[in-house]
Image 1 (cartoon, helix red, strand yellow):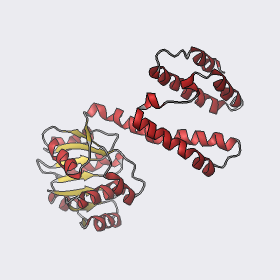
Image 2 (cartoon, helix red, strand yellow):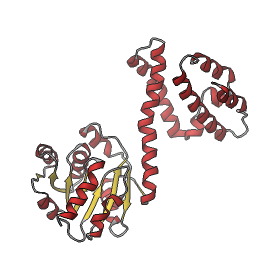
Image 3 (cartoon, rainbow, N blue to C red):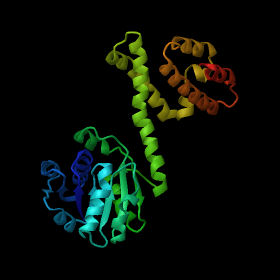
Image 4 (cartoon, one colour):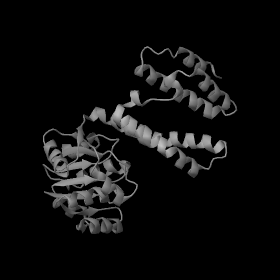
Length: 286
């Protein structure tokens, strides 16, 4: 089984390298710039391809690892130029889009899928190292789904099987815990900065707390990992927090939103806990 890639960015390079390390045959890469294809080819001991028709002709599975916006354009070009043969497997690696973005290839007799590694690709080598512990999601045609499942089983990676209408919620969850966690961290560090604590120093000080919280979630789950003044029903502390932010409306609004969400979680943790006073205090704040 020969594998080809259209797109030689971080995802294409890292996943191709990971496949190569596990014995899969990478035929080559086609990219917007030939220099990118050459770099990916060196990493995977494969071929940098100038002619897209050559790549498609010589592979069994084509991974489209371009930017999300370019996936459909690549697929439509392949169909328009009649480069696809019946039975070819096309896979894109976007977390946000379902396999339906490749539906024109399906009409040309191909099998279409989305395969997404649930991790960030900031650096190629780190991504290759991290892939061994990464969950994947698979979604697409039932008929050849076992081919992708067998790839992941050979790689040793766990995976979810999704339907096309589940893909957006799956991606939303990933964004919330990855991207929005960065936003939450930035908010916390800005509070430190407002009292003169340097951002880098503040991060180092908070890191053990962050790490401990993540470990508690892993060990106990979110509800049981919840600690702090809201979990305790500590009205006085929350009043002090609100008072400290009275001159910073934007920061106070964010605090209120997160506090009310945390009250909901605290109620799930302990149904008998009366948190009505806390809710009222937060909702009354102007």
